[in-house]
Each structure stands twice: as C-alpha cells, then as structure tokens.
Image 1: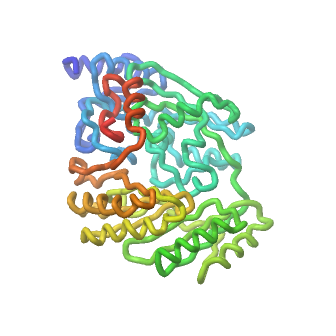
Image 2: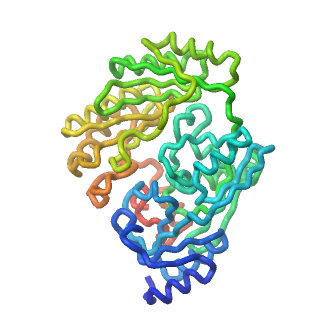
Image 3: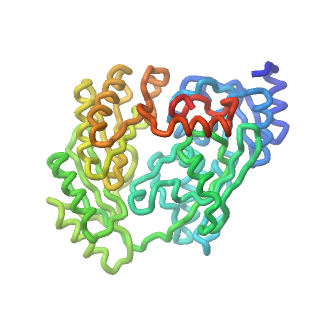
Length: 417
C-alpha cells in the first residue's frame, strides 16, 4: 500500500461521491478490521472509489448486509470494505419478464416488488436478510434450482467495476440477448474476487397459481434414496426435491410441485403414492429451503451425483459422529447439492476431521466437500477449505487478468485466489 494518512485517503476515496469513514471492529472480515469503509451511491462513484483504491494499492472486500461476509476463506488483506447498501434500485420490465436491481437491493424488497406483478425471481432465500449482490457473489441457489437451474442461469446481464476502477456491463434487458451470460457466470460465486458487482439483470418467471408440498419421513438413507429416484422417474415433474436431515432426527424428503390448479392434486397424489405415510400441504412451512443449522455454524457444501445424494448425506453425518460432533444436512437431493452444518462449538481439529473423512467417503462416488462458511471462532483455523479444485490454473489466469495486483478479496477464493 502506498502510505497516506487516513484523512488524505478518505478524501481521495470519497472524491467521486462515496461516503467514507474509518473501519471498526464491527466491520471486520474474518477478524481483519479494515482501515476504511466506503459506500458509493452509484456505479460511477464505485468506479472512482476503486480507481483511487487501486492507485493506493488498497485491498478491498465488498459487503452488502453482511449475511455472507463469513463465506469463503479469510482475505489475505482487507484495507477497505466497500459497502454496497446504497447501490439500490429496481427497474422492472414486466412485459419482458426481466428485472435489473442494484447490488445492495434487499432480496426481500425485490421479491415484494415482483410479486405485485405476479412474477418472481426463482431464487429461494437460503439466508434471511441478504442482498442481490451477496446472493450473486456467493452463488447460493435454493431448492427450485432443480427445475429452473442455479442462480447463474437466471443472470442475463451485469454491471461490475474492475479492480482498476473501469466499469463494464454485459447483457441487456431482454432474455434473448446472450452477450452477458459469460460475464454473469464468471462473477456468480466468485466471492468478489474478480470485480465489484453494482447491478444485476435477471430473467423472471410468473408466479405459479398452485403449489403442493408432499413430504414423508424415511427410516434411513437407502429408503430416502429410493424415494428420490422414484419421484424423479415419475411424471409428476417436481419443482424441487429436498432432503432434510436434522442432527437429532430422521431424514425427510420434501417434494415441491407447482403449476396450474387443474391437475396439481393429481400430481401430488402421484408423488404421495411413492412414499410411506406422506403428508401434503398447499404452502411450504416457514423457513422451508433454508440452510441447515444455525447462523454461526460451520457450513459444508456437498456435491454428489443425484443417484448418491442421500448416501452422501449419510456419509457426512457418519464423518461427524466419528469426530464426536454432529451434522445437520439439507439441500437439493434432486440436484445433488447439499449443505451440512457442524455446530459452531466444534473445535478446528474436529471440523478438519469431518471434512477429511467426508471427502474420503465421497471421492469414490464422484462427490466433493468444500467449507463454504466457517464458524466465527474458526476464521483463522488451518482448514483445507477447498480440497482438489478442477480448473484452478484457468481460474488463476482469469484472476491475473482481472486483478493482477490482487486487490479484490485477495485469498478469499479457491487456491488462494
């Protein structure tokens, strides 16, 4: 970093319109307290801010409402937190089923806006209180990803600011414009290591008029796996097939059906006939689809072939028991993407043991385990968060091109990116 007084830095960072203040312990990222916090009101101010930060070689970390600030590895440096909560705004082209939203726009506000037009962004809220930018930066996709694809497939355009302060946009306000797909996919799930997202354009879907949730408790993972296979082979066409396995209880399969009123009860009956002692509801319970465990738990992301998803959940729970702790598991059995929550009180050695044992168990079946989020007490723990990472050389080359001085969330991504 080129040395400058805090007052001088504040003046230079705020010259483009960003509000700048000194960082506090409440602004820490994985325990690293930033020297300054800046909140740009628009893309132009964000570009001026990052250009000034680039000039002074300040390492920056983006933050919205802070619900995802614990995701990824600790940044190697954190001189500046870029607060995106002023980057709000909703431009809704209802006739085109498209919306552009500022990165700091709360997802709840966006959902309410779209619902008034009978539309939705098909992104289930896995973490309460999140923003558009946080959802895209973490790439969190909920239960309906099985039918509509992961979040990155809903992004049709994006505006980002590069590390050197240059703003770039891709895509447009119509779904058929495919120019933005690559940029959107590049930044979705990148944890802010490639650029500062200032706005995102999404494709939308009409809100289905009818919904049914058919669920049943399974005696073990083998039965749960068989039920999943039956449902996926059926003609019911579910929107989501979720697995819920709390730390202290039996596993449960939840099948979400959406569509027109005519026929949905027949589809629900077809699914119910495939399960034992099923229950059917016309609305999901509160918190349906949310991540397992508590907010401060260590969270593992598990991917596995759909044919082995329930078995993968069983293996991770067994790994936790072997380390004298426990794991609640939940996620999409229909897409093969699950999350496991290890209690925040578990010590670093136990968490590392769970991860290692689970990786060994899943490796033969084509599964993987990464540490998506660590408990606050494990921020500095020596954990192998990513395991083997395919395409790491390409990812590093992209980082070198977008951020050669490693100023954007340095070290937060796979392989120290």
